[in-house]
Length: 273
Image (cartoon, rainbow, N blue to C red; front, top):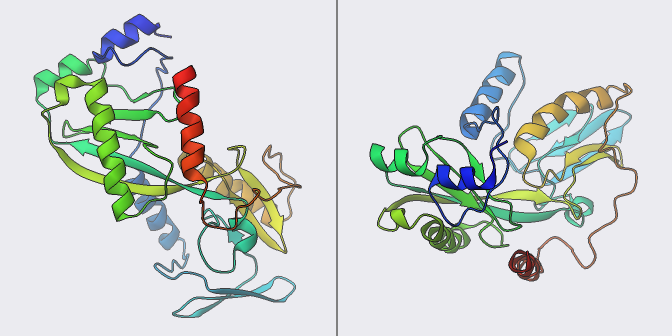
């Protein structure tokens, strides 16, 4: 463990108030990981249908399903919904239980070796402990990748740009030495949040599901792929996230109209603590 003063000194910022050091912690390139997983799937004979949203699902018999997309019809013995369940299509039951929340990131222009050594001598991955916090690390080409919730909103080009401006301000507040550095990239995406921010695993009307990772799906979902394969095969599993009762989010019917109020609540909590 690294105490608060030492950690603050290591990253060279008075705005970082301390935390825990995970010596064996690491981050990964999620895009490369997904590409690697897809490549292995193809090698095993798995069919991947890209850019084909599901518009209808019919159960035609025991272990017999028909999935319809705008391009084709696909027959399957079992269905596993593992994409968050918050999109349009035949997923209304899931949309009432999952809240899509945007997550956003920016990267600076490449920084000098001297500046990197001064601000991040440990070259670690960092995350703050606030409800609306930030995570950041150096990339291989010496850019600072700086991300976070920024604001409780969905992800789209306009929202990503506005969130990027908020991240820029947070970055400058934490690292005034980088105030003159340009932001080269800004992007966003959506995470699937459950009401208690815990994953949900189970079966609804014959369809299996695993979702609600609430921002921690990169590592958890990989593990759950193996667990769900056993569940679909009817094997006994010891999974703490198996859900028998999953109530809908009150007054939530798919579009998260209440996100600004949730964001305000967490901002107040951060101010009070």
